[in-house]
Length: 330
Image (cartoon, rainbow, N blue to C red; front, side, top):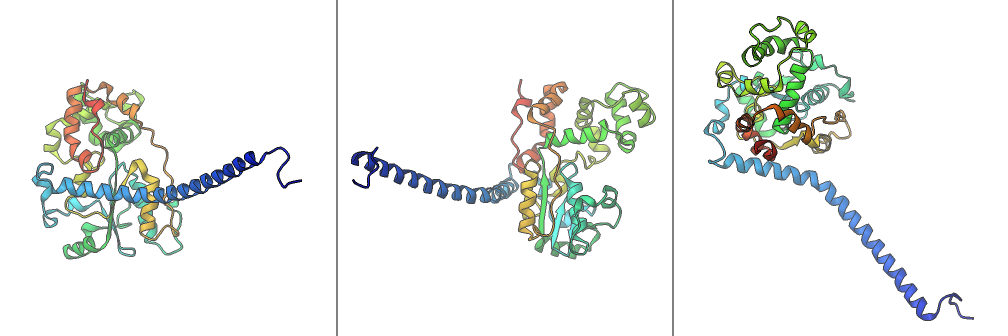
C-alpha cells in the first residue's frame, strides 16, 4: 500500500500539492500586502500633512494668488491680530485657535498641559475656565522680541474647516440657540437691516418666545454688505481663517482639518510626544453633511452664493478645500 490517500491518484496528488503551495503563497502574499497596507495607513496622515503644507507654501508664494495685504511682515501685525495665538512654554507649542474648529477642546488641552503631571482629562475642564483671563498665555501678551523667538523655535499648529460648513456652524450656534450677547450685538441689527423688521424684539428671550430669529440668508446678507466690514472687522466666529492665523506669515508645522479631527489630533500628540500623557477629547459627529450644505444654501440666491465664495475664497484655496461647484452653478 502506498502512502497516497486511497481517494487520490498520483496525478491528483501532484495537483493537490500544487494547490497547497499556491494557497501558501497567496496567504504569504496577503500577509505581506496587509503589512504593507498597515505601514501605508500609518503614513497617510503624514503624507496629508506634507501635501497641506506644500499647498499652503505654493499659494502664499504665488503673486497671482496672494494679495499684498497678506504679504506683510510679522512686525506689521498688531497685538490685536495675534490674540488667537496660545503659547505653552512648558512644551514649546503655539496654537492658533479658530472659533468653530474644535477650539474649545484644544484650549482644554492647552490648559491641562500647563498643569502638573499626571495630566487630567481635558473634558473635565469646564468651558468657562478656559475663557477666563490669564488662564492661558497668549502670544500678544509677550514682548515682541520674545514672540519672534517662540515663533521661530516652537511647534506651531492650527486646525481649519470647510469655510461654508464653518459659517453654517457659526450661524446655528450664535443665532439658533439662546445667546443674548450675539442677539443684542448682531441679531437685532441683522433683523432690522435684512429681515424687514423696523423694531425687532428688545430681548433674546422675547425674540425666541415669538419664534423670531435672523434667517440664514439674512446672515449671509449681513456678511456680504460692504458696510459690515467698514464698521468693524468680522466677528471671529465668521472671520476668514487666514485673517485669524496669518498662514502666509507664520510657518506652521502642523495643519489639522476638522474633517479628520481625531486622526489629526492623535498624530499631532504623537509628534509632540504627548500621546501617552493626554488624550484629545472625542468630538461629536459632524451634523453638517454635503447634502445639508446644499439645503442650507437653497434659500440663498445664486449671485449671493458666488459673492460669498469670493469673500472666503482664500480660505478654500490656502487650506485645500474644493470649490463648491454645486452651490455656484445652476
